[in-house]
Image (cartoon, rainbow, N blue to C red):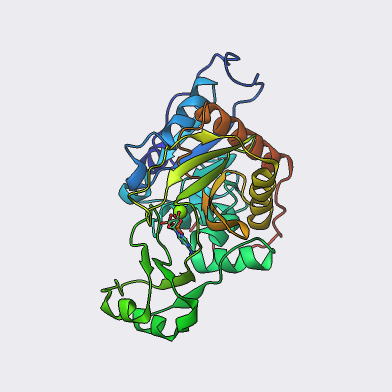
Length: 318
Ligand SMILES: Nc1ncnc2c1ncn2[C@@H]1O[C@H](COP(=O)(O)OP(=O)(O)O)[C@@H](O)[C@H]1O
Ligand SMILES: [Mg+2]
């Protein structure tokens, strides 16, 4: 494969010939990473600041923009033209990035987060099932392929929260107090929906973030309590919240992630799990995430996937 076709897939940045040890881990070998950047995040700080930190430490970081690039999947092969140690993705619901990340994973290349873990978190129905199967505190969840099916939720389970199955950014979240109110609601039927009992809470969420080296907690206003007087700020991580965060990471297999929790009369309950969130006010987040990405990429390099020998009748390069 020519280098020009390689350049058509990724934006290649020159690798610093001088290995910097300032502010970053001392290096012997630069790591080669491909950041898949979804259209939605093209102008956002995350994940670009992580890529910048890695470059400043002397690593090679190429950027693949799946919405504007014809991706040559053969480049994803280990030892192929691109030959990355790992692919990194901050997912967006229904974005093309996850397909490419999974393609890389299918070829045995490390992905950050692990692409199977992202699958468990990305679809809220799957996440609910995983969380409850792992014994995590998570609300009862009904899945409805069409909005009309929600009328079958028993009246005694109201008030409900109705949300899109592939939702994010607190969009299209409704509190519904009765079946009559549900009837009046003009729910978007273009995607699948979830319903959960509304969990009584003080009117704010706690966002828990794991950068891969430390857990942080922040208070955030709930979209269901827009008038609530809330100071959005970092708060101390109690041992209970720390344990809950670690348990979610283990249950899903995520390394870089966040969760939304609320404090209910029956204790903390997890409402949402997000791979690679934006990390709000977390300090030094670019350096923290960059170190985690390096650790994961190197761990994967140390344990290569063995591929069975198979010689197809057809020319492999065809
Ligand atoms: N079952 C629930 N009970 C109470 N509040 C909820 C419930 N589900 C969601 N919420 C509120 O709505 C917010 C958004 O829901 P979430 O499931 O996190 O969707 P999104 O993916 O849009 O962030 C939560 O952070 C919480 O404030
Ligand atoms: Mg959320």
